[in-house]
Image (cartoon, rainbow, N blue to C red; front, side):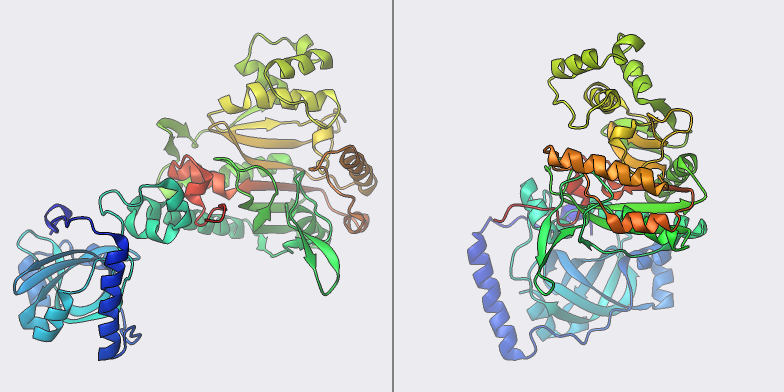
Length: 503
């Protein structure tokens, strides 16, 4: 049966009244025996059954007499005298039950007629085709496994309020096929990343999520307290410094699919808790990291979308071609050709232009820092096609290796797609004395009022003093990548349980 002819709409009822009626049904079930049985064995999934048997016709199915055991949530129900139809949804899709009084008995059939949408039921039976050609289970045994006390949202519209979608993701997943598809794709993306990294001889590791010294990124941390040690701890802003300690220790290719926590603003692109992959490879540099980034993103697109040409917000994004590369000033001029080289080299002019665009001046001093702020104000959002911005100024890259050709810039890149940063990578700074001086400069910025500046990490310097080989490293934001590959407008759409204010 199709959805259109499954059910007739019932008059809207007060939710409290519906719940009261369902609780009464549950009370009767408790009196009759075990209300929430756990002895039903499900052997088959709806998607597998459709894949294997949709191509068989009615006589073929009857001849093969294929027995199945299926369970799921009842989403549609049509009672028709001595026979009824129900559509059941499991984790893979939907399948129809054909339920007749003659096959399951008078008592079970009478009970079935009282069951509600959202109830979780199990059935055994044989596969059949209806007269309309729909694969169905001819039910010989029917069980109510879980009574649903709350009514499902309107079957055509799902949850109407977007905030409710985020708060009650469990309801959204029940009623919204697109939402389920998004999170299935997310899982495929994460799995694909693991496969690529293992193919490239990387080792997956786990590093602490609570740090005595927050480091690895310029970000404001969340602060907590360890009672037994009587000391403050910080939720991880990045795993970088621990991963590079492992490279020092001889684990030459490591990666971590990691949760990070940054105590900063929330938006369509920012959640205080987010997921990244960070990876580090000895005897490599930022060129190799850019190659790895392109490979990872293409493979994820193929796994999640079946193609490397995807659509986002109605516009095409071609991930198949080599990604563009610009320096910060090249990107500014590409999208603002009226800016001259002399103007962009003039700190006073850049400062005035940033103010003119209504943006705040950066906390880090220096021309490079000002150029980056101008880039963010006038060019970043225009980078629709995949674009590596390379050669960042040293004052905004405290962990990156300086260029041998120009000590004022670093061998660093950030990847932008659809106007958003997706990755950050560089040739790692492996000179402990320079790293120590960079940390001291960060401490000075923190003392001057920059909440996001780094702390001095003496143990990391000690590790570096044992010798960090030439190393490339990169971090890719998985939430934003999933947004891109599922055409999601907000980061909350791709996080199962985004952070919300208490109800």
